[in-house]
Length: 159
Image (cartoon, rainbow, N blue to C red):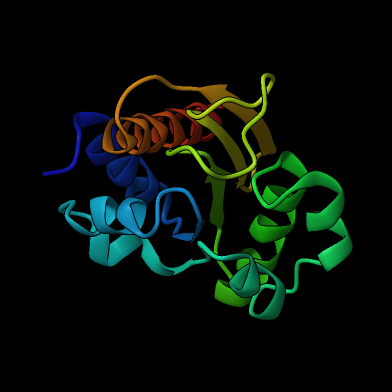
């Protein structure tokens, strides 16, 4: 069952007549699934692309190899490109791209530990680019990231 904030976000999008699409790396489709279980899902959810592997980011979503090489696949720079590409692909009013580290073994560093999540959200009101470090299990990190995304969208809608 989706969290209250995801339900609230979906309802707010529906009331605005806006739709939403996702480029999901760290959340691997869970965000689309959470939004699909809201009452307003049929009004708002356009779709999503799971781009967990670098190959998908490069081949399907046209993230330049040089950008991934320079910044890593889990970075603000890559996340912004993913959002731009998915916005065009789905022609969505709101587009969310999310990358990050939910488990060890990726591009984590002392300044980018496991739990670091990058958000890039394009809305008619603004472009939101931020990062946050969450604590917990991989699932807890993913669920916190989904709720943070919903909060950021609601804040943008009410501007």
